[in-house]
Every structure is written in C-alpha cells, then in structure tokens.
Length: 634
Image 1 (cartoon, one colour):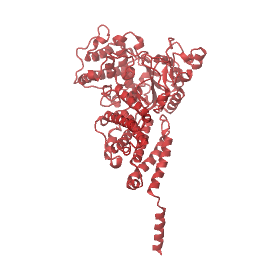
Image 2 (cartoon, rainbow, N blue to C red):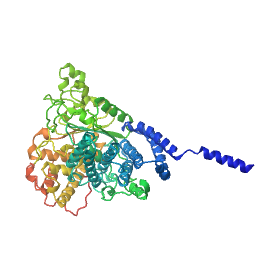
Image 3 (cartoon, rainbow, N blue to C red):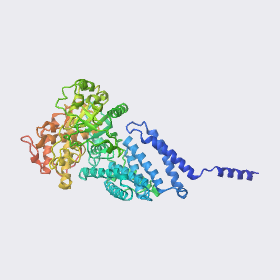
Image 4 (tube, helix red, strand yellow):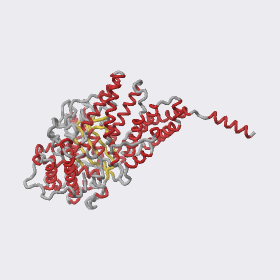
C-alpha cells in the first residue's frame, strides 16, 4: 500500500515538472521586461533607483546561471549562441548603466569582463552574414564595448575593436544593402576622429587621480580652522559640453570625456597593462576575473564623486538635474558644474572656438543622439554692470535684447529664442548649496554676475579665456585635440606642449619626465603657498582639502601663469582665464615664483623666448635635480 502511494506520488511529481525550455523562456521574458524598465531611468539621482538595479540584476543572474547549468538541453532544444551573447550583452549594459549612476569603477570593470567574454567567445559570429539583424547586434556590441574601453583607457583593446568594426562594416556593405549601414559608417568616422584627437601623447599619464603621481589624500596639508571653517568634499558633478562639429563618440564629447576621468580615482596599474582578463568556462567570470576585479579597487580610497554626464540637454532638463543633485547633496558636499560651450549665440557662423555649421538633428538622431545643442551669445555690452535681476529673461525681453544677450549660454536648437537660454541668474537659487563652477566658453565672464547674488553659499568659479589662445603650428584657434583650457585642467603638461605646437613625436620621454617632475614641484609649491596665505578667501579654503578640487585649482594657477606670460597673449585679457573669488597675489602670474616655475618648464623645451618675464626673473642656479624626491600634485 505504501509502495503504491509512493509510485503515485512520483508519477504526479514527474508530470508536474516544468520543461527546461519553458523555465528558460519564462526567465528571458521576465528579464526583458525588467531591463526595458531600468534602461530609461535617469543616471543622476542618488540611490533612488538602486533597488530597481538589484531586482533586474537578480533576474539576469538567475537567467545566466540557469542557461549555464542547462546549456546542453537548451542547445538541443534550439538555443542559439547569439541568444547567449544577448544575455551577456544585457548584463554588461546593466553594469555600465550602474557605473554611470554611481561612478563606482567596479561596475565598469564588470561591464568590461562580460563584453570581453562576448568578444572572445564570438557569440554573434555564427550566421553573421546570413542575417542582417544578427550583423546589427554584432555592430551594436562593438560600439558599446568601445565606449567601455575608452572610459577604462584600454587603448589596445580600443584599436582592436575599431579594426573589427571597420572590417565588419565593409563586409556588411558588400553582403547587405548599403543603405542598411550608412549610420555605421558615420560611427566608424566618429571613433576614428575621436582617436585622432585623443592621441597617445594626451594619455602618457592617466587623467584620473593616481597615487603613483598624485599625493595621497591623507598627505594633503589641512588649513587651520580659523581659515577653513569647514572642509567640503566633492560629492557630485554635472558635466556637459557642446560645440558644433565637436569631437565625440556616442554621447561622450572629448571635453566631458576628459573631465569625467579627471574626477575619478585611478584604480590600479592593471588597467594599463597590455594583457587582458580571462574568462571562466562558458564565458562566465572565472577566478582570474575576481583577481582582476580586486586589483582595480583600493578599499582605502574614498568613492568616486558621482557624475551626471549630460549630452545636449534642454534647459529644463539641465535645471531639473541640477535641482535634483542639489537636493540630494550630502551636508559636507560640494557640487561641481562643468559647462563647455561655443559662443556662437545660435548664429550660423563660425565662432572663436572653431564652431562650424550646425549639425542637423536627423544626423544625430540616426545615431541615437539627442538633437539639442549648447551655445553662448556674444555682445559688446559688459555683463559685469548687471545685477542678477537684470539678467532675468523677462527683463531682457522687455529691453528688446532677449535673443541677442551677452549674459547667457544657449542650450538647444536655434530659433527658439529665450526658451533655450540659460543665464547666470538661473544658478542663483542653487547657491543655497556649495557650488564649484568650471565654465569653458567665450562667454565665461558673464558668470561673474553671480558674485554677490548668492542665496547663502558663495560660489567658487574657474572661468576660461573669452578667446582661444593662438596655438603654434595650428590652423585653427580651436585645437583639434579639444578645448585648451580643459586640457590644462586635465593634462596640464600636454596643454603646455600643445600651446607651443609640440606633440608626442616632438618630445623625448626623458624630456617629458623631467618637465613633469618640475611641474609637480611647482604645483606642490603653489598648493603650500595657498595654505600658508593669510589672504586666502574662505571659499577656496573650504575646498583645498578635497584632492580633486585642489588639483583643479592648482592646475588653473599653472594655466593662468602660462597664458598670461605667453608672448602672443601677453597683456591681452581676452586670452587670460580668471577665477572668482580672487586668489592671493603670491600665486598670481606676477609673482616671481610663478614666473620662475613657467620659465623652468619652458627652458626644458627650449621655449623661454616664447614667454615674457619680468625684469630680473632668472632661472635659479641650483635647480631641482632628477634624483630629488617629489611630492607630486600633478
């Protein structure tokens, strides 16, 4: 009797077993639904959508594990290799999206790991030239992997992927109708142009904050409480750049790409080795993956500041992001705003920054890019005599100068007037929280109007020259390598070389290293001078304890000294950057130590005659030797 009951029980349980394929496709459907929800969530809200990420990631983890454990049965039931690759691609996209939300480098490395698994396992190769949809999947995979490799600075893999992308597009053009791949030819042109601008010379050293060349946060001297009443930390940053016809790939413009890296910790030297990571069986992360992931993180370092990278935002979207980030900013936090925009004022003419004809919206939409643009207006009326209220859009409209104002940047397409203008006073409501503005525009001076109109927190501002410096051996004032002001902030020695018309092929590595050592010493001296100054404004004093902001400020001092002493721009204010509030006179270009610092570096490159120094300023007889210990701030 008992045996009979057991037999019936086993029979019923066997009949209730759900087929493997049914479970698999149910998981696929569930994962697809959750993925579609999280894909369009904004990247700029602190922790608000983490629960969504963990839910969708949990489903994809189950799906990935299930297909591994039941691979043979699923293949026999008709599962294709490209379907496995599609799951891996979705997981990689999830990781990259979470990196963009959190700036956590571990998510970026996990994205790389899964994309590399797809590449090495060739999931999309089978039947590639028999199915145009499969060919497009492979092309999209290569483009997404390229973005991850660019951000990680895996340059060898970048060049490998670019070659594959070129070959695949050419083969697809021969195999399928050419009209199907026009946009992919544009993608190839875009990445080639990007790499031509972002040369090896620009990446001699990582742009990220590296403990190999930058001081450890614990070693940075602190100001006494009497000067710095509090120590703020860079917690969030909003980065946006637009110049018509500017160098970009996907939604990363060259300038924002550099600033993004400049505001992160350099994880480990392992990211810059030529050897890639290895994957476990079936493309799953293996033991080598875990070692790699551990190598790229340093638990002793603070987390990276969160960054919202906005590509051609509308004014309302930009202000919405700004409001959200300010609302969620921690009490000890400061928000960095980086805006780089041409000064064409929406007019169809070339600007001093090299802006050309406007790129039409269709061309951008075809590559899944937004069509909004950022401009600035230029007008001979000085903005400094205007208070915040007089910069109000309605005020300008009543004066009949609404569409041609000198005191604004233009976000969006032309022809919409003030709807696309953003004014300095638009930032005033957000000065209830600490702001650090970096404005790279020929209209940057307009933002001085914010000073005195703040609602509680004085704003720290680094403002670019209103005109681009004439660059030796360049046929345009806007250098093809990007904004010179931004390069000074992210790669100062390379900017110095570009100003003189030098590139990697012109400079011996020994010469570069010697100049880098001198620059590091000079930057360190500037930092110490600021800390010891009795006249340092509290706005700057409260930011000097943050390593990222300190580095930006000290590099700005170098930029200011170089451009004010450079012969072609000497005594020409339009070529000189400025900051608000003003800095102590001991660190200004008129100071002897500042001039000696520039003279020493210029001497290494044989370019002392390219600068104008004060009478009596000479190279010190006992200069720093190569064997001297360096406390670097570079």
